[in-house]
Amino acid sequence: MTPFAVTLLTAALLAPLSVASAADKPAIAFKSRSIDVSVTVGSELKAYPGLYDNLLAEGRREADKWRATADADRKDTPDIFVDGRRYAFERSYQQRSSIGRYVSVVRNDYYNTLGAHPNSDVNTIMWDAEAQRRVSIRPLFKETTPRGPTLTRIAKAIRATLAVEKKARIGETVNPDKDEGLASVEPDLLKMGAVALVPSIEPGRSAGIVFYFPPYAVGSYAEGPYAAFVPWRTFRDDLSPEGAALFGGDRPAGDEKND
Image (tube, rainbow, N blue to C red; front, side):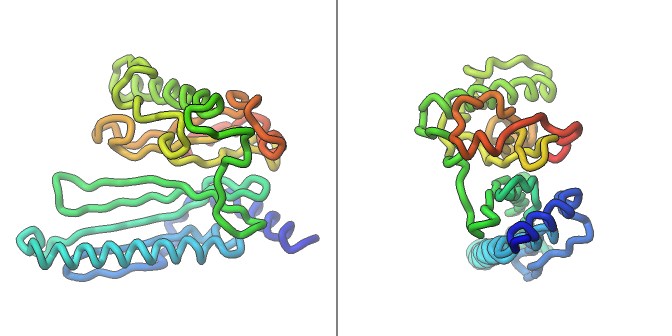
């Protein structure tokens, strides 16, 4: 068995632990008069050589940026830091899936700059466990031209899914192609949300892709974050040979709870 195969086997055994455990302690944590910071990297991500260290380095850079910003703001506007008030920044990385050579990681940020309310953000990282580097989903498709046929089809599916969820949350029917909030979902990989692969009931395959949106991205702050799953059959004809080999099967029951 090759070292890479051993790595994938280890990852598969750790798959049930993909959601960051409460036992995971922050890898970075500090508190000053200006800010309270923590960065947590899910321990399951140590199974993939290079990934944990890559995420930790990114988290450290972001933590340092927040500390510098908070210190500067405290110097410029000390009044908002009275009575022990301070900024807060929390980041967590957790595994969403491990499929073939690809590991999908969800990065959640929480930050409070002492405004009207705290805010949050979500992003994703796709890691090639064999090449040990971050990669894009572009090679999984024949073409990913902005406003081209592939992304137009996927963006339409995202908006339709979000429209159903919006009705469930706000009790109003919205037109997925005309709603003002959903108009921000455009056929461009930079304007379609943060993407991750979703597992399948077929081993080694992905049932589709999920797109994450933080508060404000496709609706009001009160609506909260959204996630839109697009099954692989929606874009079956758009897949490259590599993508066709990766996607297949249905989503496991209850997997939507991991979005």
